[in-house]
Length: 153
Image (cartoon, rainbow, N blue to C red):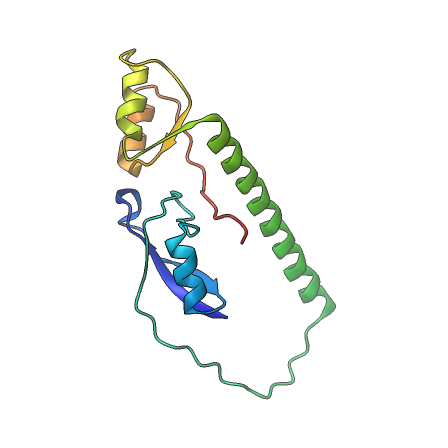
């Protein structure tokens, strides 16, 4: 497995740090990227690029640290909670995609226009900066930020 540092290039995520992606090999990464199967976990954009990375070599140490049963249970519980949250977020994402229209970077304009009665109200989702979303909320627009998790490959 190869771990790549990836970066979302959408205007919504320009200030964000990159995220990690694990792939079987470079060919798998390129195939998934070309097939638009890799998207940003924050905004869902498929405009992803691979950052320059350095190889990480793991030094093997001979340590005799005892791992207690309590530590194992804590870690297992933490992973279980994370998996459940990810599953819930993935379900929410799929419901939004089924029942709403993706408007991309035009989200803020369309939400504002709907609020002002200039266009017909409908369920939409897309991108907006934190400042733009805060402005919409100040104007009385009901907006939710939902972490956009990637599909399970």
